[in-house]
Amino acid sequence: MNLGSILVFLALVAIVVLDIRYLLRNRNSCGGDCGECGGTCKWTEDIKQARADIAREKVS
Image (cartoon, rainbow, N blue to C red; front, top):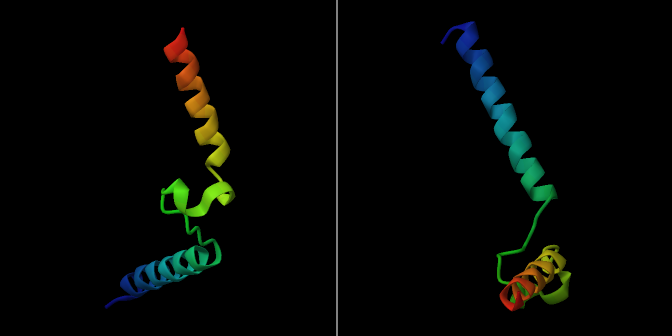
C-alpha cells in the first residue's frame, strides 16, 4: 500500500466511525407502527393532518 491508499483507507474508517457515533447518539425507535408509540411519535401530527385532508377530499 502506498501513501494515497493509506490516506483513503483512514478517511473511510473515520467516516464509518463518525457515522456509527451519529447513529448511536440520535437513535429513533420509531418503527413506523404508530400504535406502538402512540402520541410520542414525531409523525403523529402529520399523520392526523393527512387523514383529515383525505377525509375532506372524499366529502368534496
